Picture (cartoon, rainbow over the protein chains, first blue to last red):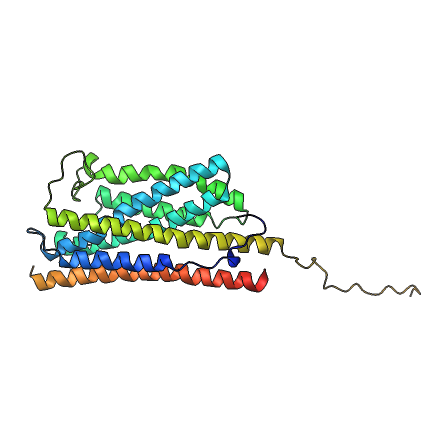
Length: 249
Length: 43
């Protein structure tokens, strides 16, 4: 964005809202029309939103890492805006993955929560990225803010492989990976196709969300700059100096 | 667990999921609208 071009001059695009709605609808219809799993029954339908949410958490934090690294290299605030947009969306999808996992766990395991390695590491990842968003509120200097959060954005991504491989490295109650694994996928075709549809639809939804969240980040930066550069009254201007009586007392 | 009871959990999960998504997307729309208004007022 150059100095003369403002976000308020650009019309706000409406297509991302439509894309998000369609992606949500496609996921809902696909997951409600497929047959139930032979073992889990109807509860398996929760996986069609739980797994895509977990996948998007990985993707979003990976994008945050890439955009943060690009900011550190190029010092271009556009990369910082992409990083924060993806981090915030990633936090939402991590919360969804945790919440949906808990709703599935209660009828399946008998408990809402257990201190299993996968669950615990996912919760830690959620709080670390909440910390990333909080860190951005510590300064109004755009480049200082971008620099600090970019360092955290690069470092924090180490949690993604930790979360993913936790079910392999430790003995956990959470089942091992069903799709992202080196071995061939042993899953019913209809369930696998529905899961892929849901993952693709959620990824499209994430992309549309990114467009709008980046637009918001641009507007917020523009507002911050305009507030910082606005003419502000000189401190003490309202104070009227007392008249000096030259006559003496 | 009976199928009807399982459906209750499924509906709870989808209700939670879509409520969170709609709330988040609405928050983006509201923040965009508010920021544009503030820029329009002050810039």
